[in-house]
Image (cartoon, rainbow over all chains, first blue to last red):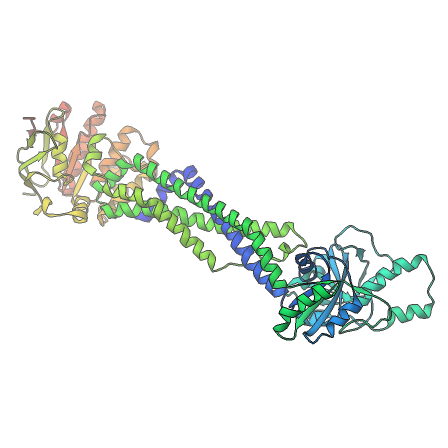
Length: 418
Length: 210
């Protein structure tokens, strides 16, 4: 026997009260754990996904929407921009490089992104299998898309119109998988990437079908000539793209370029860093609210632990006197009460952290495609150690008064009272 | 002389000073402290156990004066050398019978007597791992006696150990206290107003409220 074991025996002697207090504390700490995890991983992800993108240019509309749709591929695009205007922008002396994007289709909810090889290079992709596209209708799958759909290189599939699942299929032409990427933990994992030409041609087919029959030669030329690997696709026609990812040549561009685009063109410029910090500011209210709730829960559980210890000590005054009579010092009784509080809160903290991670993993397993699905629920952060320290503090503070009462107990008075 | 008191007195706040007769006992000797309720019997027992500090006088056990010890030293000395049997058993309910006795070992930092054979001698060997709530009143009292004996103390103090027991159990408990204290060579002091106990121990002093 020792004091630690004695404390544990007293705790387990009242499983309901102990369990309730532990659960209350664990819930508060679980909320904090989830918030910590999401905040940490989201911010990391958000910066990772936007790396190398200084500015996004899209059709007039909400700048936040442009960023969400063109960088993170979560929201709907604001519309299309004429490729001629985009090409003019590319020539600007303020611009180092641009990558055009053509969005608008999906396969089973995974977005099909028409772009060029620069996009792959920007995201520093590696190939699990195969290679990048060379011809129209050749696609490269992100690691998660390949894993979830189980498709392999060489297989074909039909895209659907719109960027979310369930719209009508483009039956005219199938995509062919030529490459599958290694998992990167970034947005490319959940994208289907192809050339801009593929996206155009898919939509052309639909319109033309009703009209004229193409000659075989035309068809051959259109569908089997290599696509542009860098820059804009070569075409005589007036074509549209959805957005343009821009990298600045100099810091000066950050000041001049957005203003110039917004005032002098029909397009809209949006900065990922600016828009994301605006978004986090908006979300901040909710996060603060949740944090507040968590702290209230922890406060209540601290109070609960205090009341439980205090009440159980009242019932145990005789036990305390007996312990003193058989040789326990005041300090040992003090230690016993503190240990009870500490055991309770440390168990609560561990339970809270496990609960938090389990909750996040449940959330992830419920979400197949969103941003949430790419979170890692079983990554442990250093800040979680602080949760344990924080819980310990709650335990110590809650045990202060009960421990002092135990320390003060007069043995003779207690023993003669009964 | 193993145990000796000299000119002990004590004052409860706002009441008259209590004066107690001197006691001196050798190893294996037994003594009854008789008196009406309210006469200060329990106060005397608390003084003998070092649970209260006397106003005047001294308590000397095995050459050590209790009032010279203080704080945790006194607690440890008490745990090692004085076994107390209370009016009610007052065992620690979350612990089993065995763990209650192990706690006494731990707090006194001794390994004392072997728990199992002690319980067997007291006739409750089968209750070794029993939960406290499952014990009968008589069994619980015997466990509390075992707790008082388990560190082989030099002095055993019993405060009305028989007040809630029937004749049969009274006889048994007093018999056990006598034989066990003799076996470990401890002085035994029983505080009681129970006339039945007198038949077993002839040596007595009386405490009177003056």
